[in-house]
Image 1 (cartoon, rainbow, N blue to C red):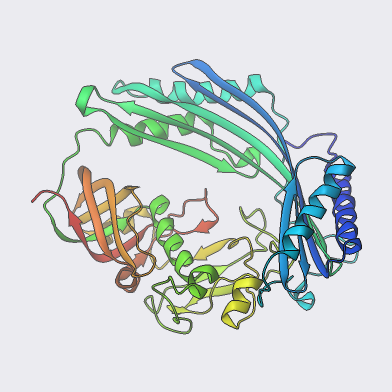
Image 2: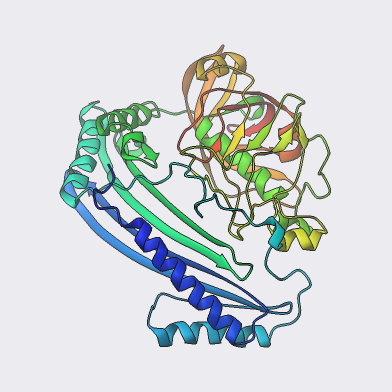
Length: 454
């Protein structure tokens, strides 16, 4: 629930006032352009293990970052100290750095014409991201303990716990620049999770579950989180390997979003202008099946990454990233856009909410579509080459026979090439994992190399 004495508006006004003072200081020192980001965060985090409290941490953080431009020379500095002399020193340091850097033809603020425009009252649309929780440490500990206890008590095969944790926090931020743009944002986030251990000795398996949301009411019940963690853990007992070969592979929803992450890395401006992407010069080209789509929805109500403007103040809008299997655009901020001779896509600071279209049903339907093959529920390692697209990662999960889980699997590697993997996607399920701003269900790939037993 929200605080009855919500002072966020006053605090945001203070941050906006501070931002303007810093911009004025930069202008006085001769900067031709400047931008300021100010933020305040506060949170409560607790952890428990085996029924005992391990940590209780209350945090309050502040951050102030100043960037100045002298023509196309850039300098940045930051501080957390609000004393006047510290603020003056921070601006002075940024200006000194700018004066000693080389000209960069891509440097500068985003174009003024692209700035988001506020409503008539000077605010931006409320995207329902502000749900601070006035929870105290005792209640937070109770939730974590209840979650762990539910997991430990739900199955006799649960032998130990790696602990449960609860976190709750909120943040306020203001971005302002010398175009006259001032954008205020506020958001909250809460989480509850547990990791459990089943079995004994060399037969032990570890697994868990967590819940995440912007509002307290978005979280799963503590007992439900614990029981789901237990179910997932005992299901991993007595794993086997599989014979090395080529098989269809189904990525569970929580792992499928990593495939979208690899796509984002390849179409991001930094990788493209450095020529370090396997999708270089692929805008407008078919890289997925014709039915496949990804739409960015930054203005989604209560979206985990909703925002009316990006980290440079550029107005966001709904737009396709993949349309009919074709790469519709790249993911750019103003700097990378200028390096590429393009225009920003309002993605300074990253993507917002992505909606990956489904062409199939729920998880059971996806298992039927898989038929006989590998279900991946865990990925390990970082064996992905962003330049070539070569992909090789340690994995665990389940072997599936005729659409039914046959036995758990671990100690294997799944390998392929991302371009071929993307083109060979057979289905996307409707079983979305709601805990990420990448909204995607399970993904079925027609064939990959699975390295297990020889």
